[in-house]
Amino acid sequence: MRALLTFLIITFAFSSPYLLADTHTMDHSHHAMPHGMSVAGNTSAIQSQGVIKKWQADRVTLAHPAIPELNWPPMTMTFLLPTSQPQHELPTGTAVDFSFVQTDAGYQLLTLTPASR
Image 1 (spheres, rainbow, N blue to C red):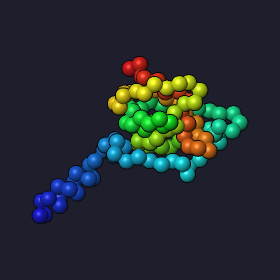
Image 2: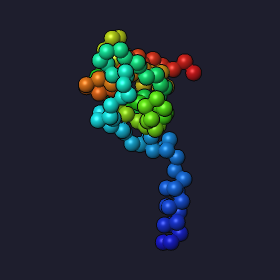
Image 3: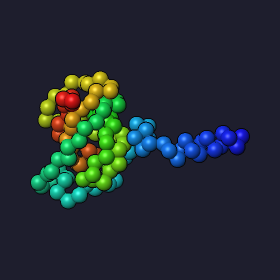
Image 4: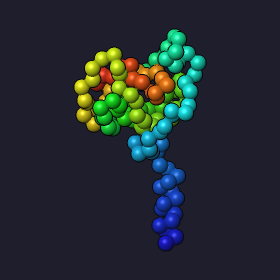
C-alpha cells in the first residue's frame, strides 16, 4: 500500500501540464481579454496553433499551447466557428492555425485553417 501511494504521489508530481491540457477544458467566458482585444472598437486578434479535439455545428474544441499575450497556460477550450467564411468540418487530430477575439458570446475564431507544418 505504501509503495502504491508513493508511486501515485511521484506520478502526480511529475505529470506534464501538456497532458492535463488534453483532458481539461478551460472556460474563459468570465475572463476579459486585455484592452484592445475585444470586438468593440479596434480589435487585435490573437494568433495561435492547436489541434482539433471536437467539431460541432457552430463551435470547435481546440487544444492549444500557452498563449503568452493572455497569460494562458496550455489548455483545451471551445471557440465559436468563424462567421465570415464557411467552414467544412476538419477531422479530430488535425493541426490548425487560428486567430480569435473575445465577443459577448465567447471566444470567436476569425480564421481556422489546417496548419502548413
